[in-house]
Length: 432
Image (cartoon, rainbow, N blue to C red; front, side):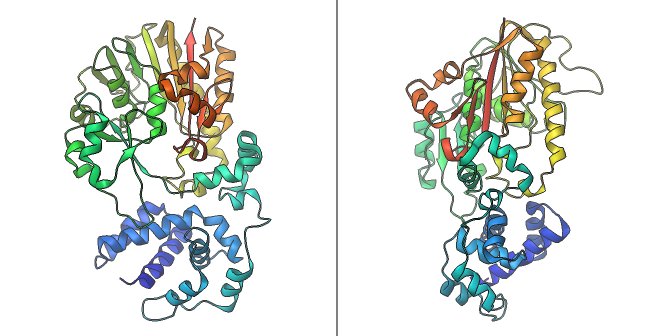
């Protein structure tokens, strides 16, 4: 496919996503199935165009003063890829498979319009109804923070210290230009360009043998801040597919008891194979059966309960740019109830002197600091471990991290703009 034909395909896909209200990943998969003539490079390039339009969905329409799929693509090419009008006109030439030529109105918009004076939600590319929530947490910085949340995310990996070390993994992945992450001592980062194909980490020998796992650096730090130790009894209450479970197992050095469970047993399906590949032998996966409590035999004995709480996922928009446009106000209210419920489930599990680590991949104060304050108000036997103490696990990087991340009385908030990670909130609560 020519570059111009890729643009036409992207316009078609964006139009489908808008009109049929279908998730972008599903639309891209179905398009690939229906257009088997398109090579892997074509599919990757088209996907890159679609994802970038979704990143710049509001601002591109504002720039072009039009909200069609074509207008959004043109606006994105200027805002995200800095393409000049002459280059654009050469692609939009109306030839076979190419988009129709730029209209006078489109050329005029490219020449005269900018984002100057655009409302914060448009300049930052997020739903307007979220603006009061973003203002609460970021204030005047909300456009800059949201813009970073709309950027492309790198591919982050965690070295599994049960099987490997970072130096060894760096050598094994040198051909992918992997570099150490700035904060996590076990993290690796591979930068991806707009049209880059997935580097195929799952086919790498280090991945197959369990030496590395895909995990954002923010998620790695969230696990590290729990301070899970060898010999402890640790419960991962919302284990899902097991990403943080694996990180906790490495922190525990395979010693102690690690229990993983989740209310949704379907989410747990991949965890068994992942634990086996990673060489984790001290994990006990508790799959719920009917209404029975899979943790009924555990009371007041856990050293640590980790809650990777169900949340709106606003911190992961870099990786799921269409999720923000599908998010509705009611989703926040549902998640707030879910979070309060899972915190209550953790209370009877923790022993005196034990800890609850509350983690979200959201940047919203309502899900983070406010949720923690409400919990401590209901349970005065718990107190917040100071964020400085929580971050001390970073040793010589703790002070720099404290300067970068957003600190509150309840915990740490990491963001793409401040820490170069996905958005994560971490609060550690200790029981008297």
